[in-house]
Amino acid sequence: MPTLYDKSNDRLLGRISQADLDVLIAQLEEESSQDRDYYIDNDTFLRLTDAGASSTLLDAIKMALDLGGEADIRWEAD
Image 1 (cartoon, rainbow, N blue to C red):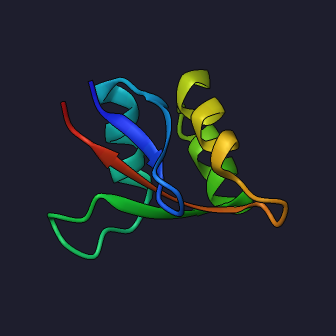
Image 2 (tube, rainbow, N blue to C red):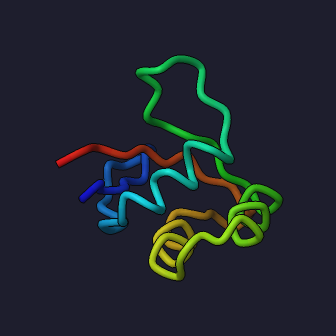
């Protein structure tokens, strides 16, 4: 099960399903096939919501968003 972290401080945000990881990969830009970090802002959050991201994924991302509605997150495989 993939694990999400706040990239700024390595804080654990939670474990997500493979389906949610697939949503992240499909909806967000990757610089390479090895890319495992993403910039999230409010618009990105809404795009993930519209794409069917689970409440587990969305809640994890909410924990990382700062007061300006931005975050850098990363994921790791088990």
